Image (cartoon, helix red, strand yellow):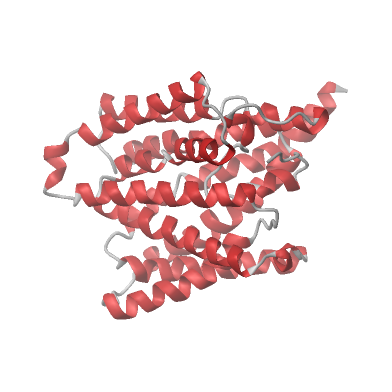
Amino acid sequence: MLLNSRESTFVPTCIGLLAPVLWSLPALILIEIRSVPTFQALTIVMFFSFISSSSIIYLKGDQSLSNLKIKDWVVGVLGLSCNQIFYVLGIKYAPPEHAELIYYLWPIMLVFFSGLFYFKSFSSVSLLGALLSFSGVVLVVGFNWEDNADKYLVREGYLFSFGAALGWSVYTLYSRINERNSPYLLGIASGFVCVFCFILHIFMETTAPLTLYQFFLMVVFGAGVISFSLLFWDYGIKNGNFQLLAKASFMTPLLTVYLLVWLGKAPYHPTLVLAAILVFAGCLLSIKNSAETLISTKTSGRAPKSVPDAIAVPVVIQDLENLDRGGYIRRD
């Protein structure tokens, strides 16, 4: 019986694991299209995200978007705009491996903002996780600064990455406390962001010619990383091993750094490896027991007692209401 249960969750779990793999690709993609003006690239990326998301909604016949109000759309568009624009600028102006690790401070920020919103005390484990993650970022900011100063607008890139993390954590918290849920909000919001970026491109940039390779990467970014990854993730958390997937989602910065170094896009240095491990360990500790709490809450109905208990396990470019749609009871 136990063996059959494990077999039944194996394939959905493997499909769900494709999402973190896709989430590790943006930094690599953005390096290859760095010569393309920012808003021109985002216009194309958001267009294909919108097209693929709309196709998924049509094929699945989902009606959850009809429950949303205007403010939900406004927050979704602002959250996606802030996250994508700042993230792209961070990768463009700072060393990608540094920008990626700074961006992954957003789970720590989410724990902090959740504590303020729910008036919950911070556990010692959460504080230790925050300390580890920020220590990793300190190593990143202090690592090889002088060598990168002439090649990148390092300070601006770091600030953009931090702004992307801040914007995403705020949006995620709003998504967490919002009663009107749709896992496809961000996909459709991509259409509005596409128009916004196109306007900015017309007034602020000069259109650059694209190679077929660059165009292909933008399609992968929009359709794959932003849209289909959510489809894989949604199926995985509903039918696979939820705890394994939740923890695997925080492997994204480690996987990204590994790919950057392995493909020669970032220099190997022990300090970088240590920083990546610290950020990863800090994220895991900060959301310790969150997945277990979601599962136990489903059966016991107990209310959360600390900050990690009060939030769902956060994932990149993923609405947290998906966890509820998967059958896990949310407690405000």
